[in-house]
Amino acid sequence: MGVPSDGQTRMLLALLILMILVMLAGVTLATLGMRARQVPLPVSGLHGVAGILLIVLLVIHDLHFPHNIPLNAAAVVLMLTATGGLLLFGFRAGRQAVPGLVVSLHAGFAVVALTLMIVGYLRG
Image (tube, rainbow, N blue to C red; front, side, top):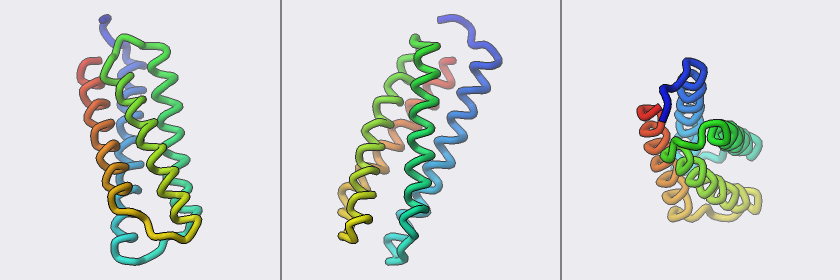
């Protein structure tokens, strides 16, 4: 592994900040959902679009710096997270009750991905 450049470090930091913002939005959506306050579907969609943007940017980064295994793993875990998010979006769009297990798995995968991203950032 080489020493990370300033540009690479800034990119990783930007990805971490985006991840935290997407997670904060998700926590807000989940909290409102538990309080039986429905958020408009486009707002949930924005959360999903931001998550997909994060995945795309992380994959682009991984293609340029494939040696950072934790970041590569984070990209895979985020793809699983997005799959769960798409399932949740489908439930909401169909006006069906959102299963708590799916919400928990979606959130759990996001926490694992964030942890992997932090480890990858610290490794450079």
